[in-house]
Length: 142
Ligand code: HEM
Image 1: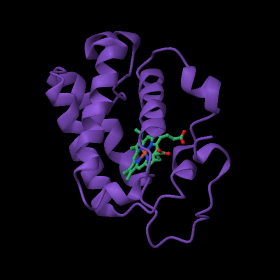
Image 2 (image 1 turned 45 degrees about the vertical axis):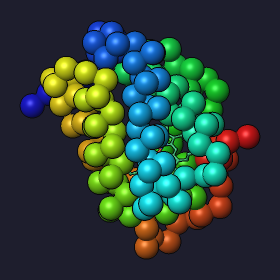
Image 3 (image 1 turned 90 degrees about the vertical axis):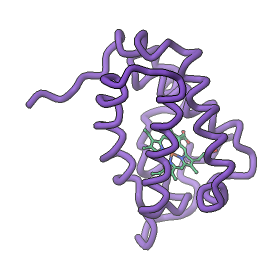
């Protein structure tokens, strides 16, 4: 079976940078309201939002602004300072999916995207693992 592809036209179908921005804002509203999720995130949510927007834009085939500014995403390593358990991975996926649906992104696009996000989110789980918790390189915002 071929991997579903993330292409330029996918970004267009999502609705471009403005749609990504709205999706991330809506995702963060849900994070802020969740008493398990909110404490995982830093006090100031704004810098993280901006990084996630740049990352998703790049991941969907847009300009590589995230990597130009921050280098290779190395997502698992960048998440080490934040203790992420199975519950958090499940909620991350749920809130992200709700945000995409709220934006009105077509189901086939959401399907392809979440086929990728699913394993990625579970790969981010690091609770009860002996990983370095100190900020690693760019893992915290300057
Ligand atoms: C599994 C549950 C997840 C949790 C609880 C979580 C939580 C976090 C937290 C707390 C931060 C730091 C935000 C900040 O510095 O303000 C972060 C950053 C980030 N997350 Fe996640 N995350 C999860 C999964 C994911 C997944 C699946 C992706 C990718 C699709 C992702 C992409 C990012 C990106 C790009 C950043 C910014 C990294 C940087 O440059 O420092 N996260 N996440």
